[in-house]
Length: 317
Image 1 (cartoon, rainbow, N blue to C red):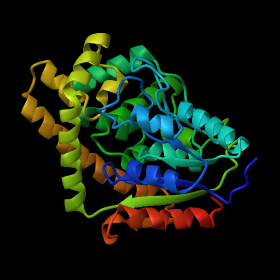
Image 2 (cartoon, rainbow, N blue to C red):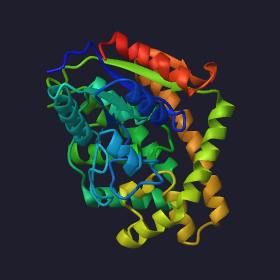
Image 3 (cartoon, helix red, strand yellow):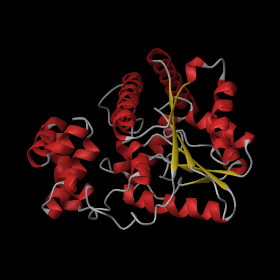
Image 4 (cartoon, rainbow, N blue to C red):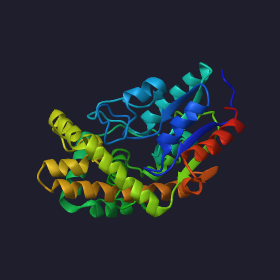
């Protein structure tokens, strides 16, 4: 098995350039295989809206932890930890070098600091909570969460409806708050024997916002509306967890006649900007970042890539 000092992770807010830089790193260093840490790229068929690498890239650079399940299937952080851990072990066993790339902070924290697996989903409880959110708003459920688990509520946004619902679901099933479960040892704790070097990309706010706007426009040009429409017809279930993803939820609102096409596109941009802000807050407060890289301080993407390659070589890549 290949012996490297630490497994390198490249993260950062959405549209910061993680994917482009990681591919350039893989071109520079030999035997790199990319392990995705993106909670939406695990779904099949959701390609444009998740900015998933295309087939030409996948043929050139092997990727793990993408296209794993149908949008209608449940998938949680424990599933990811299990799959990512197996992928990393397999890559190292074949004397290749894993590079973890993605912006889903909860997935990264679960790899670095394992959390509990938790009970399986309960459709009846979950559907009731989703109905409450639709009827009374996200704030109502957030206030309910604060009653049962104020510690966890302080760690998440009042608009983070997916985690609010999951926390209330866990409480309903187990009778204990999710913060209690996070403190318990889980079945993966003894398996994750790797050390990690965490690199976080950052950009100035105005530049990041411009990149977000450009990326959304490019997604629309590539067929985002058509992709969402096809998936919506295929599954015809607005409550699918996958369809809560930014880019999909807003287009579905447009398809249902709740908003105009232009308003939906602007809402995607706005919600993506908010996501980027939440991601940076998470990275600063929840992860121990080894290297912060301000991409705007480099003259071009090649120089930024060179800095990351230098870090990786020090870790045995």
